[in-house]
Image (spheres, rainbow, N blue to C red):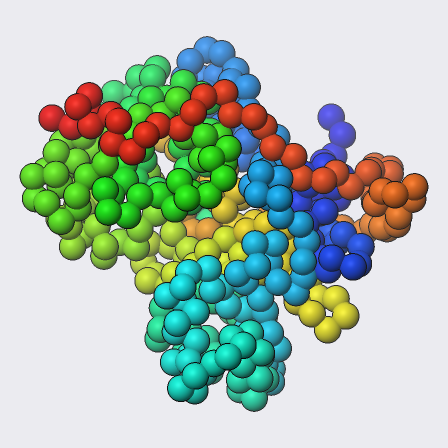
Length: 406
């Protein structure tokens, strides 16, 4: 069997076409992100065969460019493909910041300690250029803004940590209760659904998954064939019904900081002791309260390219699809076990494992209107982002309440 070629995998994924400046060549990411994603997907496939006896039809490394294809995103360095993230120089490195929400933009004056800001990114660049990266990070953490430092000191831990819990009985069609939102967690749930799991998506009546407001094709792709439950998390009766559903589940997926669910009286450790596995996907692990999104987490982990005075994010929110696939691999293994487990997926460390090291040797050039890259395995055309067509519509909010909430 030939050795994997990380450059060829990156070129095929569509993520290479998303990396770099709009007026420059596409760039190869450090490490082996596309190859790592393929490895996670292969683990999902193998575990599904062990559980069901048949191999599921799973996507490939094209997952890395799927959201961009649906949303019509392209490379636009120094900003992220979605436009919410940018890294700016400090006196000793780089400071990256995500401003995806109006609330985040509203905090910029507090971040840079100026009463008003007309042009946020110009003001942030001027402010960061006069301080150290550590000072910028301290201010961002204080305000709970999603951010990145480059170069970053990252504590050592695996991307996926697993703790063993109470006894459980493996089943062919496990019940998955999915409390996640946006991309990484829903991708994990989607991949498990493709292996035959029954997936129930849980949302708040007052704050449903933000992807419902985006392109319907992306929501349908991740949630088609799933059930939907909507609850009022401030209502004790709704919380009790939700806990009862979790206790019946084989696996719970969630992406909240640990204290948020504990305040609601939902404790992962108790469910795991009772035989329900629990998988948490967070920016930097369950023991860290720092917030993060796919672009800033990926850059903090090293998935960026320095070029011509800029620090350019690799791909589109790379931490999301990588972590979603890594979580699905861990979940598929947990569903085979005789004991429930508590799985802690740190997006930062999943990307770190995939992005360690410089880019593999390669050459990029343009020929006849297309970009090409040459690596150890030969010449490869740089593919643009592509996306699968959803086979079913995503569920309406709360459509499964009568079926699943007792």
